[in-house]
Image (cartoon, rainbow, N blue to C red; front, side):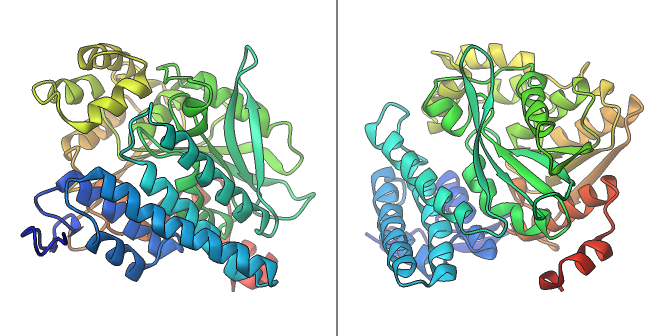
Length: 403
């Protein structure tokens, strides 16, 4: 069944392209994958072809069609690599990773296919990292009691050059492998290395070790800083922090206590996470509850709400002593007030806070700018580079290929 047969005709709206107006959550996830085309992580024609073969609301067809694209892309990557076509191989591994990520999205956390699919995401990401120049690294950051945080380190310069670095993580359902196509082009070309990390409750740290999220996010972030300080290619005095969505909460809370961070970004944020989640208690059938319970390590929606109270920003972000950027789209499904409340509270408590809003006329108005992720990352990485004291003209002179 295609979307026309179901009366689900796509439309461009204030929040960007809506593939199935009757399925707003599914449409948001489609836009998320489609937006990856701007950074090389999907192909527009392939995305729409996959959508045409999905049944709106049927998550099995969602899994099936993204799997088809992922497997085809991975086969192309392997064939190209064997023939010495390294750029084509690299491009296809990046797309395969993103398509596998998309296919995994609606699987139950105890579905055996989820772990297998996540393994495929990382397998393709690792091959992509190998092809970068300089090559990216797969790292395990010690996290106490034999545990670790899964991460990728991507240097912006060759060996022996100490560069500023940004620790970056996603939120409730975004992990390091999605950031792998969102941030590197923008950060590396501005002279910033990247540490893309799965915090507790994210990616491999959750899937393989069962480590759920925690409100004292300065602990895992501190472990990331400790790791960066062991490297000879990182400028220890210029380390910044970026978090998207729920990760925006994690980043803000960490920056309030981790004093080795010199700038912090919340790309969409929840000032009062518990109140937001409590508003969903009357719809326990929502798919998001299944994921929330897994990430928070709770057995009931009420348990999630109770734990979420410990992630509040009031009484915490007033401790932030470095520049703080808050971004939000005016059409964000979280609403606009949660961002303006965060910014207003920070400003009122003496924090050097900046608020950047994206509206429909500019685009980037959806959650985490999924309708135009390039626009968001350009602003974010320019802001970070300025706070890290980077002269982009100097970066360009040192790296002629970026000219």
